[in-house]
Length: 112
Image 1 (cartoon, one colour):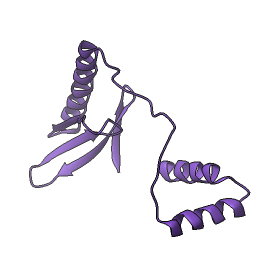
Image 2 (cartoon, one colour; image 1 turned 135 degrees about the vertical axis):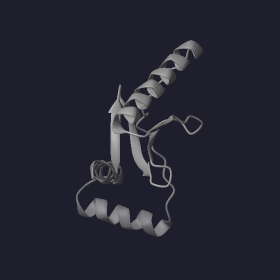
Image 3 (spheres, one colour; image 1 turned 180 degrees about the vertical axis):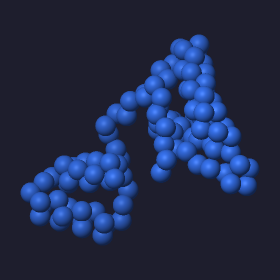
């Protein structure tokens, strides 16, 4: 994945070959929020990304809401009983609680 970061916001970058443009979407925002941007060159893409983030931050300030909310650290997952059991066994085999094992697995996957 190609990405860009600005003021703590990370965006995934794609190239739309048919349109001949780069475009991006900011990641990690609430489900009802979307920040997208585009450019024909990397310089244009970067400038539009910065403008989009700055606009979002200003818009949030006007509305009196926090722009970039940190994750709470609480994560609810629904998995099949078979996956739950296999994960529990793997955790115990490593001498970890299921929570410790899952946190480690998620951290490793996120950094890959």
